[in-house]
Image 1 (cartoon, rainbow, N blue to C red):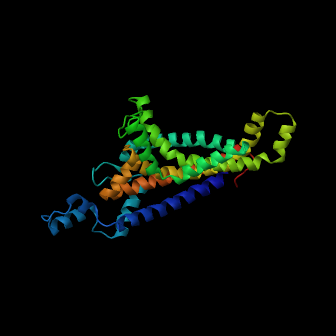
Image 2: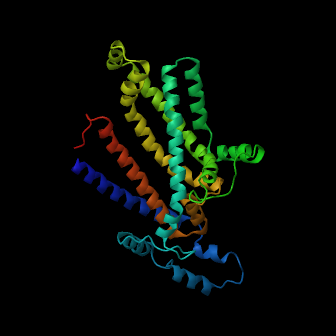
Image 3: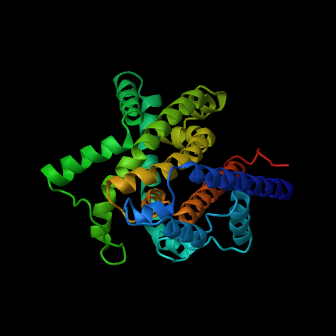
Length: 315
């Protein structure tokens, strides 16, 4: 087990190095730099001013020198400073992280609460109920998050006026107000994941319900609910957890779009603003932290396999 954990951690470090190289290179391929974003298109700007600012931000040096300085800072636990606000990138991410973490947790909770029961109903209630579940899951996968979010704002915030929109209240200040604001973004972000989990739950349950140990449990006189939840669902959880772990990547990526649609001050909004402003240190640091979180989540999911099924052992 220790050898497996060590190998995974080393693989994660190598992956993070690759991610940092790709992000660093892609940011340099985007037309324009922070200098042009700061100065705009004014005709009064001289070449000397442009050259001085490029030297100030270190953009006049070769790319490998810039990357080496950034990587050396990472090894010392320093993600750098924002070129626009001069604040440490780590502090900026930490200040926005509670909003994104709350949105991700609520989205995952929504997707599990809706997805698993729908999948069980689809597997047990064959016929019209199964058809309804498949239609709902197909719709959930087909509707883009930005379009769904816009429709929810128009319906619940503009026409019905049941929920506030385009504002933010911290959870510590007003818990109920905060949850009413986060309901629509969590619904938007978690719908596709709920649809995917319901499809996987249905498929896994159909496979498990045909196994001999389920028929034996029924023959012993156990109640339908006990057979379903204790014997069938527990053995169907591994593929469901696998899908849920993979969908964490979708949720982390979807946070950028959903936070922009609902004007939430989270890490996704910070990343999007930094890209438009060509704030390279913030973009590189935010994506690196997101990639590290995604890999840690998948690593945790892999370790959960052994907890759910003791027959699984890592060498």
